[in-house]
Image (cartoon, rainbow, N blue to C red; front, side, top):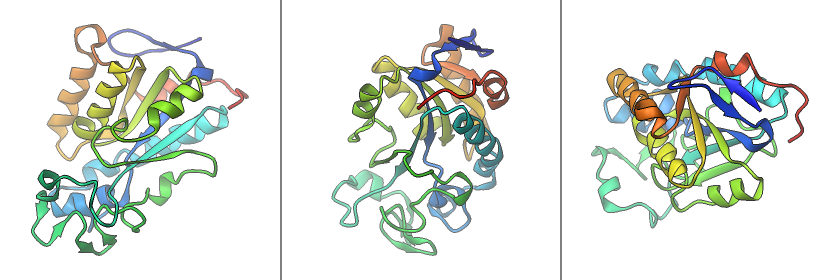
Length: 225
């Protein structure tokens, strides 16, 4: 077992039973011209997470530990996208509309895919999800159960939406989550800070919060996947 300095108290985990979860680091959210920017957001608020997440990914992979990526998006016919979600965005840049990176948040389009800096390696699962949470209408829980994963080190965007929803879903299913403050981000800094406070509040009601440097400092080497 390994202990990471965290809030509200150290996060203790078994490396063989813990996966790194990288949530929705997609071009449509992080790059200019994507869906996130069409909503009037400053994508630079999310891009600050790229460098620390890349460093963490390198260390996690070097330790031989499992990595799982997620992508939020929809089928080309939008049959899995509820009307309330379709109404979000500028009138000419809503889910399914053509954009500079292909149809917005549609599976298989350039903008839907993960940014180059954090591209999955062969063999790393990529979970395509139609909702905010990574467990809703996906195979994630079955995959984690099959591989004996009980803990999740969580990174990605956005802190108060897809990250928070996923951590809450994970908590309800019995997973212990460590959220890395410098590897998750929001278009709204205030929401980011409050979201992290909510996770660690009341003795860690949803999980723990630490930084990527805290994890890198204790990672083992040579652990088989």
